[in-house]
Length: 144
Image (cartoon, rainbow, N blue to C red; front, top):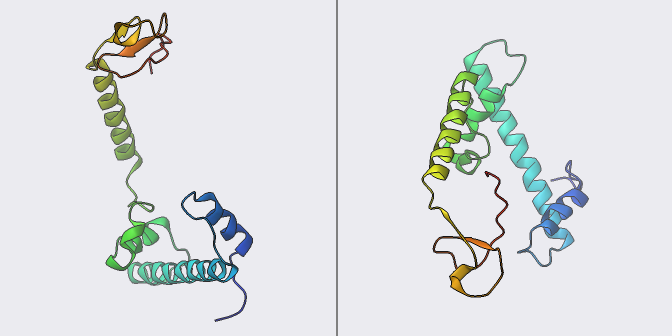
C-alpha cells in the first residue's frame, strides 16, 4: 500500500465532518477511509471491465450497464440502491407517471383541513391544522 491516496484526504475529511453522528476522526482513519474507497473503486472498475469483456470480445468502453450488473452481485449488495439497473426511457417515464398519479390520488383522498385555531382554543387566529393534528400549521391555500 502506498503512502498516498488517489482520493484527496481533505475531501474525505469534509465528507466525514458533514456527518453529524461523527464527532472526531483521526488523520489515520481519514487516510484509511480514502484508501478503502480507492480500492473499492478499483475493484468495481476491474469487475465492470471483466463483465464488459464477457459480453463483447473487443470491448472499448465500460458502460453503465456493466457497472450496474457488478453492483447487483452479492459482494456489492450495498451499492444496489445507489447504482440501479438501467431501464429503457419509456419504462422510466411510466414509473414517474405512476408515482405522480399515486401521489395525486393520495392528496385527493387526504382528510380536509380544519380552518380556525387548532384544538378549538385561542392559540393562533387564522391558523389551520390538518384534522387530527396536534398543532397549528400555516395554510397557504396552494396545492402541494
